[in-house]
Length: 79
Image (tube, rainbow, N blue to C red; front, side, top):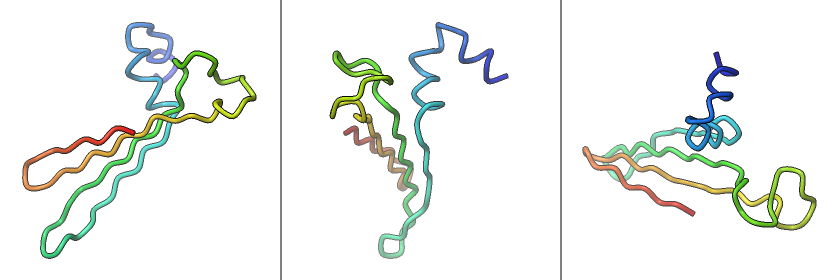
């Protein structure tokens, strides 16, 4: 099933960063409240001079996103 999704070029901008990246979800307590935190990191392939097979200092650049869910609200931080 995964190969079919990866081969679909229309889904590539959305699916490949997740498949080739990392995903972590946890809950944390802030006082008496519980917050859900999700980290998503994906390797960047769209930067000029950067690619999967380059060996320079820029080749390990990653796009990172944090999603925070709290009391019905969602906050997103992109790095």
